[in-house]
Image (tube, rainbow, N blue to C red):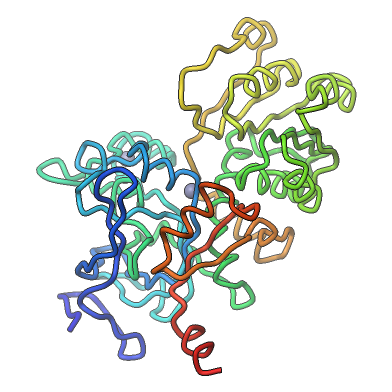
Length: 386
Ligand SMILES: [Zn+2]
Ligand SMILES: [Zn+2]
């Protein structure tokens, strides 16, 4: 029986001692294994995972290892469970926790910084200086679930209470998994200054973060919101999420169109494509003194027109994920139905079918955008009985 000193549980939500969890072996090798259910420490809770969305970064981690970092190195063959965009139900409280109740539905953000370094003290916990130092003699308590600690392709996970957000009853499990993606988009706009009402915003790249950046920018009052990309089907979803203009860069000159639409270039660019040409287009379509947020990971170093950036006093910000509690602000918009994030959710699979779900996400089978994996407990039983 799951029984640990100082940890509160409830007979309404019994917790087993072991759980099913996908474990990363060699690159691209995932195995469904049995692991002990983790135990929440002080300021932590145990979440029963009800749904988890697949992110492009999961595909990177499973194939390349980076940006995950386990015990100071690559995450392969270290009994590591990836997955970071999950939601679920609180089933155990660590010692001293009274911020949440057992049975509460919650969604999560990824990073809990160490709380003691300079960046954490500045509120920049996604840039924690003790990133990944959570093992051995130098354990600083840093957590980035699915990156430096076990993540969500499992039945249970531990979260610091600072990384947990309550989910309203009106929101589905699948939608709640999208809050961290919307939070990343929100953080991009936060780093750019956040005051985007009435300002022009260009979002480049209609992937999940880009599409939700359109929605968040629009909800924050940006005007106009312009989306660029190469696939008309994705650009159409961007329009539904609030883009005033969409530009297909395959057959249109995005720099010229942005300059025509804004007169002087855009105030803010959120670059979610991560290619040399899109980064340079960003440098050429932003106005003097404007700001560019780089929210995609290019695979290789890229050649950038730096003189253009310097001459025009352009500010450039890199972000690696959500931060500054932006996920909480994104949830406020989603709970108020200011935009419909479910427009990017395309497929759902059971946890046991994770390899198929990853294949759909990787190969964009049937135009997959966000693929969600669910525990399918009660609903699965009901479906079987019908
Ligand atoms: Zn992600
Ligand atoms: Zn820190």
